[in-house]
Image 1 (cartoon, helix red, strand yellow):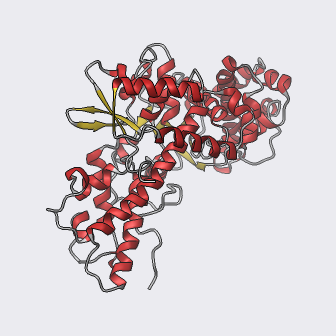
Image 2 (cartoon, one colour):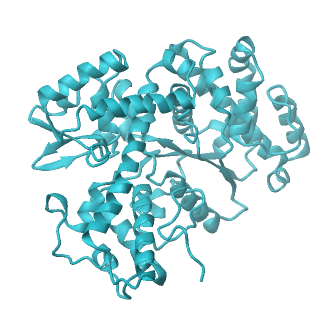
Image 3 (cartoon, one colour):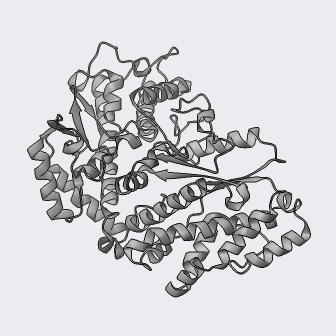
Amino acid sequence: MYLDPFPFGNTDGTSQPLDEQTANPLSTQEMMPSHQQTSLVIVGAKGTGKSYSLKRLHHSLISASSYHDYYIDEIQRDVPPSDDVQDFTFSFADRFATEKWSKAWRCAIVNAFTSHVLFMPQIKARLEDSVASRLLDLATHFYPFRDTPISVYAQLAHIIHEKDDVQLNEYLEDSRWQDYLHTIEEVLQSIPTLYFFMDSIDEHYHRFPYAWMKCQKGLFYCIRGIAADPRFLGGKLKIIIALRDHVIFDIFRNDPGSALLNDRFLLVLPWDQDSITRFLNSKISALSEQHLFAGQVRNINDWLGIDEAESFEQNHSLTSYVLSNTRLVPRDIVIVGNNLAEKVRVSKSLQRPKLSHAEVIRAITETSASLGREQVTLAQDHINTFNRSLTENTNMYDNLAQSSRLYDFLRQYSHKSMSRSALHQLADESRRVFGQGIDLPLILYQNRILGYVQDRNVVFYSGSLYDVPHKSDSKIAQLSVDRKRYEKHVQPRIQSE
């Protein structure tokens, strides 16, 4: 009998098969951009399903579209090398880096678009030869086209790798870009609308967090500019990307005004307790016989053979106990579920009818500790996005050493709840250890390590743009003057070690 190694699915959304039976927080129709939209940004933390959502939307558009009206390109994942991203970022002063990235992305998008128009047969066939020749003459000044379509990522890699600092600046600021764009907008009325999908831009984020943050912020501003200009590329390009919530969080905190909240091109994946519970139950209902004790399974209690009257830590039900040891995102549920499914399979092979209470706690604790270490690593990456001098000479192994230092630092505060004064003490001590510009409580909050207590419930960062404190709020404590106590979500992840 075939043994499925991932009964709850693969944590890599790019390789997870599409399954319409799996619960999702948004329907495909809710994600679909309107005809008027030229761009869409899917926003979420690591593990929220950004890649999977892109796949769903891509598949839906292909299924529904007529190739006469649209050309839908494959999802692009060939991101530039991290070393080149680092070098480009440090080619410019800090205050100019994001703006230069935005211009580089715009140039890459224009050239990638042109390459598809000129060399994708089903599009080129609809151009007059004289128009195609005129466009190619203009385009070859900016890129040595080789009779094949190129991705945005490949074009960006070419721009940032093959030029020195002076050449880069000259290329990005070349006045002929405007003539080039004007020509495209004039001659391309006969072609179908192109869809570009861009994923995996945060795949190597951990290597050079500061540089990748600048790169992603530049992409966001570029896409936002495209969204604001319906005439860009003659309105013939729709571009859909996925970005980590750290990027949007940072932009919103540092941009004046709150217009960003009203931008329709931002789509935040709204996972919460209810939606993640539906996700968990849908995964359980899809399990094969080899990972089930009994035939009729409605929920996690049925699945594991645990009586619904049994309680766990702090009188949690089994479902709430499992969820309390995750970040309420699909990736964590998949990891926990795969671990529990293997325990069930082994127990069945030993002719046992259910998992014991102790076995469930042990399995959840093991997984929770692993997820906690990952959260600390993500928080350290986040710290590094604010420190140019730290990341200028860092590498992946330095990041591992730094995350170990943060892990050790947090162990000093492993008591479950914190008063306002204890939170201020953590903030003061963290500035001494990690740098004066680091607001560690806010970083811990956004990475769901630190939450606050409200009406006896622990509240963690939801991922919503409306759950982001403004720049003037230097501490999480200032979110509300009535929130007296705070909960550090490191149990049992850190204390259990």
